[in-house]
Image 1 (cartoon, rainbow, N blue to C red):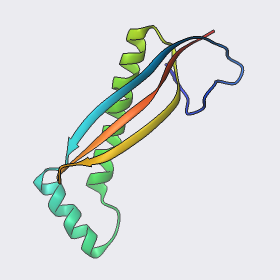
Image 2 (image 1 turned 180 degrees about the horizontal axis):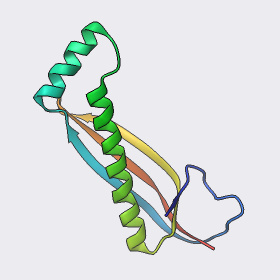
Image 3 (image 1 turned 90 degrees about the vertical axis):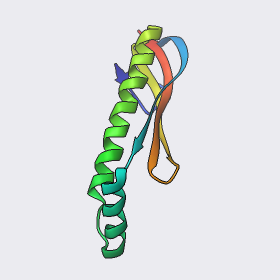
Length: 104
């Protein structure tokens, strides 16, 4: 599955548009992660546990988006973007979305 953040793919023709596809996950930091983040915010530095959580969330969101595109018959996703927001005080929502298309 080709995934592009551009609105087209240079050298390739879009022959069919299947529409919007997305993948969504909500990740909880857990008590240990919350405590570690609170401590790190005092002393400074990267919040490694939270970085890992967001990376894993993005990967899972991409996998779910790709599965939805494949189910529609697409072989590419264009205009792919990420969005994230805090859900409650201990969780983060990560969304990957784009337009499922068929490339020649």
